[in-house]
Length: 241
Image 1: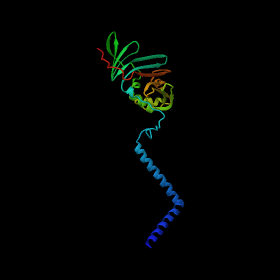
Image 2: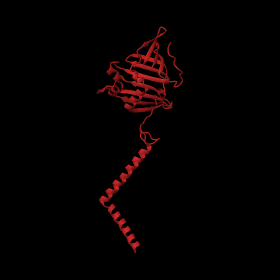
Image 3: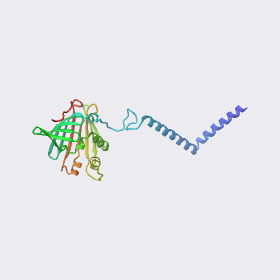
Image 4: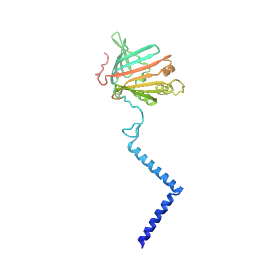
């Protein structure tokens, strides 16, 4: 007798629950319950996956990727070519660690950290940094500029190389490179990365005409092409005698 009573009570409860879920209030409870379960599941999933620019190891949200690891290792052959209005200036040399030995085609230079020397009639004498906007050559600054720029497009080449294009305002450049907060409505500057088939950046093309005009360093054009090769192949650079 008690078993039948319990069974009837259970059946009545189920019927009441089904009838309640058919009401507007019941449907609202069901709706919010489903969403609550969804968001709890999403939070757990996000915690398992972790933070970053991807929601899984295979699916990357950003439409581009790049690596400056080989440049950051500071062992390479390089060529830095400036195009300033109608003039071209190029420096070419090798870097190992914090030392560089390079030339502009006429004068030979030696660099160790912030020390620069030039060869004058066979003698090494201290000189000023010959590079224009030298912070643009710093790999940590490169990363900051790229992460602060706006992605525009990328082009995959038949050779397996890839070009990635960005735009960056003069206001942003002044803030990063000069530490000054300004508000300019100037034409944008551009940054292009050229990657090899391994994804390593081997060339950076800056067109910073707007920024250089702001600094009074040019009147119509400022471009800088940084080219890198022979990663890890250089031996130690000897200090000048």
